[in-house]
Every structure is written in C-alpha cells, then in structure tokens.
Image (cartoon, rainbow, N blue to C red; front, side, top):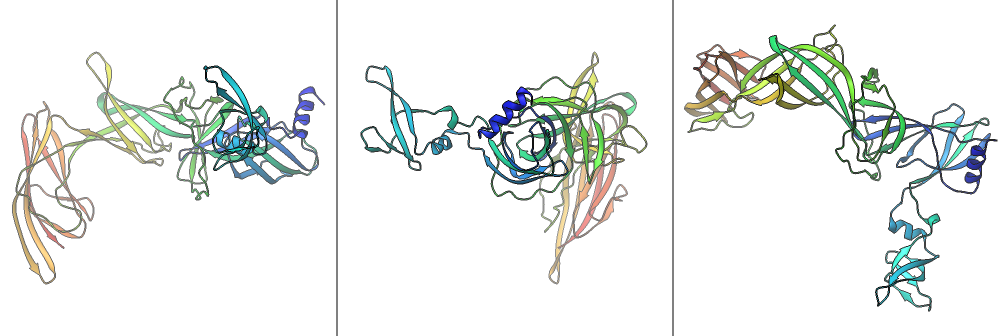
Length: 453
C-alpha cells in the first residue's frame, strides 16, 4: 500500500472527512443544475463499506454509483458550515469565549453549551446564561470547512477507486452571439457560452453544457447558491463539439476548466460562420387583441421596429447546427471600419434550418403616425359590430427608399373591408400592408376594418 493510500485509509477509519483529489467531469444545465461525475481514488473492499468525503454542495438524494457492481446503499450529508450549526454541534461541550476586559484587554472564559434556539450556557459557577459570554472560539474538529458526506457503498469486489455521480445547483450558463453585419447582406456570427459557476469550485474539470428544456422535479428543500461576480476569464481558443442527447443538445468544451466562485468563464460554442440576412421595418397595429374596439380621437405616433432575419438554410455550416437560446448582439462597421452595437435581443432555442429573428430596436429616420378617421358601432342581438377607418403615414428621412410593413393583429371575428393597398392575410389573426416609402418622402396606407365582439 502506498503512503498516500495508507494515509487515506487511516483517515477514513478514523471517521475524518477527506477531501478527494478526484477526476471531475460536470454537465452544466442552463437552469442552474450541475451533474457531477467524480472518479474517486478511494479503496473499496468487497462488500459494504462507509466513507466520509468532502465533495462540496450537493443534493444527496441524487447520489448514484457510476460503476457496474457498485451500489450506494445509504448516505448522510451535513452541509451546515455556518456558525449557528457549528454551535449546535457544540451542545454538551465546554467552549472558550474571547471577552474584552474593562481596560480594553482581551481575555477568555469557558462555558458549557447546553442548548440553542434559544442559546443557553452553563457558566463556571454553575449558573445559566441566555447570552453568549463572548465570541466563541470553536475547536477545529467541530467546524466544517466544506459540506461533509458519509456514504455507504456495496461493491462486488475490491477496487482501487469508483465513480460517483450527483447533482448540485447554483451554476448556470447562457449563450451569447456576436453578429457583424457586412456589405451585400452578409453577416459573420460567432457563438459563445458564458458560464456562471455560482458556488461551484472545481479544478481541472471536463465540462459539458446542456441546452434544452429538461424536466425538473420540485425539491423538498432549497440548495445553497453562491454569489456570482462578473469577472470574465480569457476566452478558450477552440470551439466546443456538439451532439444530440435525448431531446436536448450537449456541448463538450475542448479543454479542462477550473472554476472559482464568482469568476465567470467564456468558451467558444462554434467557430465563426458566414450567413446572409434580411432587414425589415414594421409598424404594429392599434386594434386590441381581445374585447371591444374603442374610439381613438387623437393621432398616435408609432415606433418603426427594425428586425434582422439571419438566414440558416440546411446544408450550410450555420444552418445545420442547433442554436441554444441566448442573447444576440448585432454590430455594424462605420467610419474608419469601427464596429458599433446597433441592436441586442433575446432569441429562443432554434433547431437546425430555422432562421434567427432579431428585433434590434426602433428606426431613427423612420417615423409613423396613425389616425383613426371614422368610428361606428351597432348592436346585432347580443353582439356589437364596430367599423373604423385608419390612416397610417410613414415618413422616411433616409437617402434611399424603404418598404415598411403595417400589421394589424386581432383574434376573433374581424376583417378588412377596404384599403388603399391590397391586404395580405399572414394568418387568421394577422393582416399586413406593405407600404413603399420613397427617400426623403412619405408613404400612406388607409384601410377600414369590421370588428365583432
């Protein structure tokens, strides 16, 4: 037996919790869960044995042996590393307390801890106090530096180590995409994963990131989360490899990582790819989606929303890969070739072949004014029928002509009776008017609707 193995075996037999220098592999879910896989250099005899380990925060109910022939038969988990629980472990013992004397000098007294909630102490003269006589100085053996796990394991044979899996919470990751818009409607996009470790502390770990909506059962008790600070580490040079697992997608990072609570890590999800894009302008309608149609007496100024559609056709580098939900940032070069942020938006999970739609904000040089020009209602039995006319004027301060989509959207029974531009029925709830607006000029659409409720 080696010296290290002998020391480990002696510590386990002595009932001490041992911090294991284990080979670590983790899968981080975007919802905050972390699946740990540890290869522990702990000797297992044939049969049942008990081991005390310090593996950090975990959900002890999720413990699972990763080797055939090994079964976890039971576990006891103590995560109470705070002062109040350390004091609870001290019940029945005499502690030393630091006190400050009348002249400002420091001294110590001893007292027996006889209870907590409320705290009670037996002083040297036998009397009971409900206040601490000073600042408690705990013996090292009563203080947990890390949560402690006592696990019972049954093995079919003697082994030099075994694999243990479990879940913890607190860490998470999110996808970020940088899109540089170029000439001729070409864009270059790169994807990154920002990993927030929370309370996760690991050294030299293999890391996988899982994207998708994986079901999660309700927990009986919350697990501790760590505070996340935004201190980014250098970006990894190589991209992750992707594969499908069940109905989710898994990204394996090419290099092992070390996690320290509060330090965020950035990793490349995929190498930059080039794709085409389309830019469109939209003015949203005034019709309420449900309920009655009110009368509007004043002209309303409406924003002209700018949208970029990043094309992802199949059999292309960018189109064939799934895109996890995240934040898309759009950049455009100007002046001396400097890149400037022109839009930022959240996008949902996008399967291969699905285009990315990014609403980048409102156009500065395009404005829209909407006016309700007529309004009438009448009763048809229990139903109310309203007809209303609208005029939308779009002004263009640009040096080039644009096309602006004016959308009206409503559920239930409604229709466009007449319009100056042919309406396009996009769906059962959406009707679109495509307004051509000349450079330095105005474009107008007028239409009349019938609404029943």
